[in-house]
Image 1: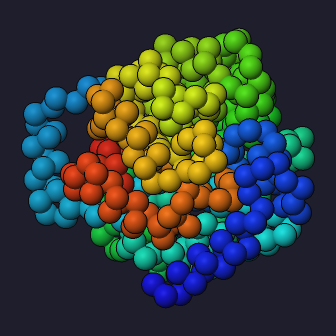
Image 2 (image 1 turned 90 degrees about the vertical axis):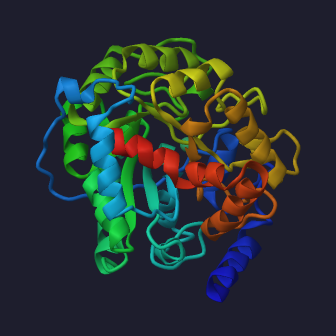
Length: 394
Ligand SMILES: [Zn+2]
């Protein structure tokens, strides 16, 4: 605990001075990110050599979940070995950030927002590590994305006593029982495919289980919300979406422009997630979701991860825990309380909302949610809702 606090303090001391205004810091990734308006870095994770077993059309079908037999079986199973996850977070940019020359950090212990040591304070959390490609790597996006997976695999390999890459629900549950962190791989933006469908299969085989079609930019699949385009998905984007469903890669709609979102919603037969987006009714920001979008994700059976990037939480320069609670309240008021999780976007930006410093602060966040909305809501948002989603679709 003390170590962790110290680490957070160091991190804050280093990074606080840099943040919100456009700054000419020596951290080019951060400057770029801020300049491009969205909190969008990420890093990603690893993989194994997978036996590829695409899901069948039936398995992939959108389900609504008032089962009987299955529920009973699951209940019985839960009674035997209830998995306990410290938290489930759908989006962290730690991989690409750690690789920046100015950080050159490892993943076990570092001064970033997230490392294995602090994750393990929560016992067995699930952390989605994002594979995100900065502008300068787009021309080599396939190789760069592979290099991030190599990096995660190597770091996980050195610390396999406390963390493993999870490829399936069984992996998540086994890791939880063994008090290990689960790392899940997600591609942020289809640039990594470089226009080739077979590269999607490649990344599935390397362990990727979640993917967003775009980041902020236009790419071969469609248009990021930051482009301002009202064009829908491109033909390759539609092709990729269909193949994702065949393989069992979860769709992440964060960053996608509005028209692309509705195309994806219409074309998806499986529930999908918005890994790191908040409510635009509370904070108007083009990366946040409209009420109609929030209802659509919920209707699909999907989950939305609350992001902690301050501009998504409030337009005031002074973002507090109360702003996070305002977004949560809005989701609950819309009837999406069971579709709300965590997608902090940690390491995608510098300065956290007041009172939070790094992943260790998820303890404080969980307590505050419990104080305001009750223990049940806190437990659902911190892990329960994403776990229920993964039980059905991971
Ligand atoms: Zn992002």
